[in-house]
Image (cartoon, rainbow, N blue to C red; front, side, top):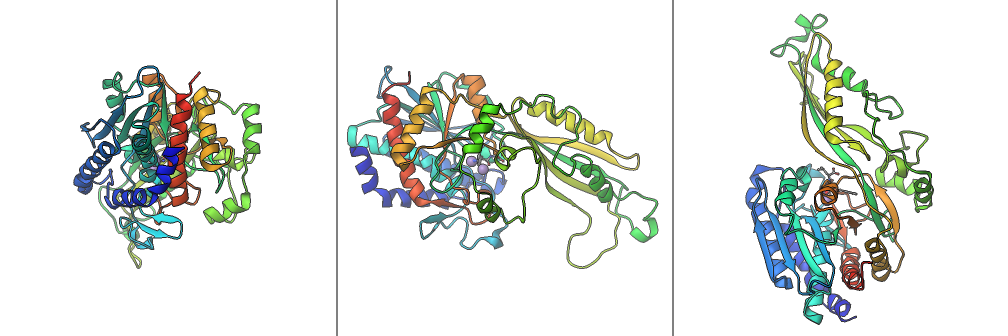
Length: 457
Ligand code: BES
Ligand code: MN
Ligand code: MN
């Protein structure tokens, strides 16, 4: 196919462009990167226009802007695909653990290192280049394309739901396409049909109204750090079962058929142990590792602090202690309700000697998409064409809140076709994107556009 030949001939330039993208430090959660967010949005709009999209614009929101582009030359007879991605990235910290600077993209062997290379710049860019390949060989893509690239995914997409509601007509499509996930293993392309949701809380525990000498007062004043540790220890048993009343009320158990299918997904425990560096796995023994990390809800402390943490010893009975607590959710748990029952329970555990305040940070709904749709079948064939292997169907444990919003507001399903690898180190130092997956991802997208054109029914 000419579009594939074109994409192969221009690989080096495509990679150079991706490097330019990764070079922009678009960290959405840090105010100091505001100008970089604008730059990244403008850069992406310009590349969309250059690729051939007749219309592309940077659209404001209450937070970081959305980049929107549309290409409808295929006409009303052809399907319309809404491509979602995010141009924001996680903070690069801790900086000292990077082997190459996070915003100086560096090619080492077949891997491009840099913050956002895999999550999600390299992945979303595959579709932009696929569209270009169609433009340069056939004049336009064979289907209608709409792109929505947001700049706030890594901080919980606080303004995206309102944006989608306000622009329902603009965003109307037959199916949505998201490349922001990964393969279950090297050489095992994976279509994700289920994602977990998220409820995120911050806990603040206050004891005395100022720090006290632990010799003068220790023994008669309850230390807020001790109290916080005792409190959070009561939220989960040793096997990972969560002890918040009502937490499991709406959890839908995995159907036997799905458990059987997941058991067939190639998974090697030893490789998984190596990937994580843990001596052994942990958690609900009656569920497999794959089930535990994708179809079971969790509770995790992301940070806990207070008192003295600098070198050396300081005897102090601190005034305050804090914790950040997140819960990954599965269908049909509702993030708002879970945040409520968790906050209520945590506050009810407060001993009389401490004040406990719980604040919700952000959340997102879990999602499961239809595995039998014609678009799913097209996605599967596209992977076969792009990677030479039939993909597996899996649930994954991460969260992409927009998938549930696309379902409920736009009424369409999403196809999650990721090109990441398990060792991409998302959110961690030394994030990388496997360059052959970038090239094959572009080819997979080219194939998908053609396959979708052949019909969605
Ligand atoms: N791309 C990830 C989500 C992901 C990663 C899904 C791997 C499946 C496999 C996304 O950018 C992400 O990090 N999401 C956050 C969501 C949160 C900020 C609401 C997450 O999962 O922590
Ligand atoms: Mn992502
Ligand atoms: Mn992410």
